[in-house]
Length: 174
Image (tube, rainbow, N blue to C red; front, side):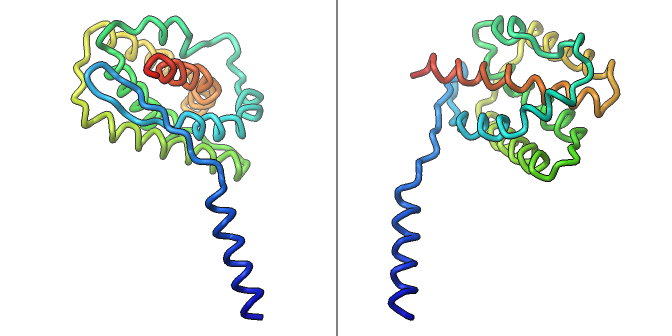
């Protein structure tokens, strides 16, 4: 019995060593760098994506569009990301609810990841320009036009845009 238990333990240790490492990308945000596990973020979002999109009843409204994220001014990437993460942590995830436990776990994991990235960015001392603040203010303005739960659903449904932007930042810094 002891030998069987010992072999099982060795097998578990071997399997844990062979598991795929979590890929981290270093994002160079103006004057600082942060590590982001974009693969992990994508995995959580992919798990909940179809249900989130199906629950988005505000088809004609767009909170985040690619040009908004693409046209971040030089030297404002750090600030924009810090403010965007703040928006998601404080406004979106705090108002998002799903009846599915798996969706709720993925949402919590995304929120925790965003909090962790935010903590790393706070060490950077990003400086925000007026244009960047205006972009985030317009995002907030669109968000409050909807009821809190609808707005949160919409913002989570648009996380694909955020993840694509983060992945593109990671590509530029390689």
